Image (cartoon, rainbow, N blue to C red; front, side, top):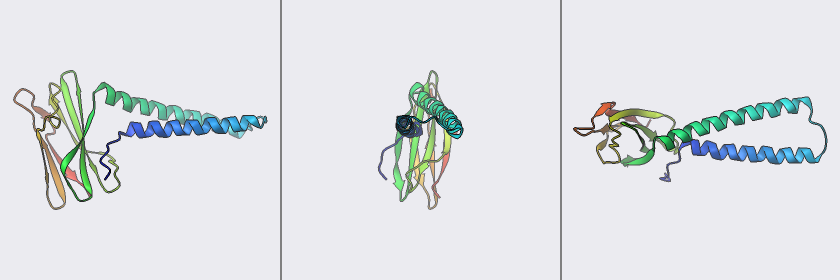
Length: 162
């Protein structure tokens, strides 16, 4: 695996920019022909604009979430053959949290395996207060807090790479 963590909103931002650039180029080519657009094209253009707006809003939502909450991403070790665990930790005001994702051979994490909440914005993975253990077919991630910043919810997460 490449070892780079790319948040989903970055991927969608790149795809959105590429699609808007393509629409711009195709629009200029069409205008250079000086023919009025048929009614079907006008409807298609409206659908494209609507989809681009929805994609832009989704991208902005993901970016704001990561930037406002100070999201940090980590690849946990040890990894097993064909499976890695990626963690996203956030901290905002007096609360912290995180999600664990499994990344298989495709290199894509499709959904969180589990999450946790920590008091006072503590980041246990960044602080090294976690334990990743592997069994024969699955694993377990234990996230610990401190005496003053306990894990409030979800301190043990099952990891399944199947």
